[in-house]
Image (cartoon, rainbow, N blue to C red; front, side, top):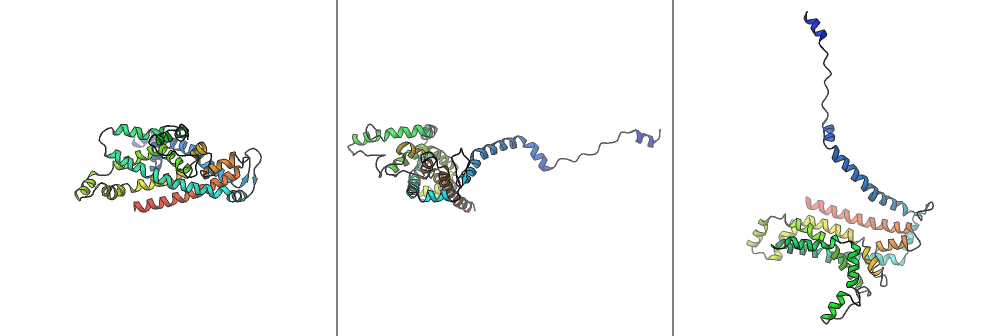
Amino acid sequence: MDTMTLQAKRPARPPRRRPPSKRKRAVRTNITAYGFLCAALFCFALFAWWPMIRQIIMSFQETNLVDEPKWVGLDNFRTVVEDPAFGQAWKNTVAFTFLALVCGYVIPFAVAIVLNELRHARGYLRFVVYLPVMLPPIVSVLLFKWFYDPGPGLFNYVLDAVGLPTLAWLDSTDTALISLVLVSTWMNMGAGVLIYLAALQNIPGDLYEAAELDGAGIFKRIWNVTVPQTRLILLLMLMLQIVATMQVFIEPYQLTGGGPENATVTVAFLMYQYAFVYGGNYGAGSALGVMLMIVLLAVAAVQLRLTRDEKR
């Protein structure tokens, strides 16, 4: 049998398959991760992005969420701006944010520094500091409502026991807002302390030793070593603190109802009143929410710019 006959009987080789591209290999390798990512994005879009888009649409409508909505243009924004409580709500919100920064931004950082220096019972103290975060917010608020009670309340009982005059914590325009700040600080301090602790433990000990050899005291070491080494975390926590405190709602809703004399009416609380108290004016409440969202976006943009400059 000659060579030509053997070649004719030999089965033909299948065409060579091209190897998959780098992108296809990456997709096959990470297909499970992409599945979880798509599910997370779907939930985020459904419960975060869509409500924001719906709020923007409703701010230009007159609707009760039952009948067909009616487009009214900027009428809802005019209604909100002309409300006498509008300016007071923004004033109270800004004041609450400033006071919360003084208490809820500085105190957790100081507590984290103290806990970082301890050598004993560190885990137990971390648990104690973080415990209020694990409680439902309504439980913490109701607990402080008893603390602030002018009759059997704990705070006035302590003041009376040491011979100091008692205070009308929630019933006075002078103390109502700061009382809400104390509640908010106690509820949310634990999360900030743990984040600061994680940042402090990443600071090389050599920097502190060098500063101590140069004769720097504890406050100089904090200012010249701790603060520069945690600057990015401090900026991030500053933005989160501002965004969270400007949306304060549970404290005035449960403790003061916006009183006394509108001293604790905040923007978020006024939104609730428009939607669920003032005859279901969802359009005006949405318009106020859009204004608050624009302010918070501006704050976030400034913070991101500062963070980018720090990284450079």
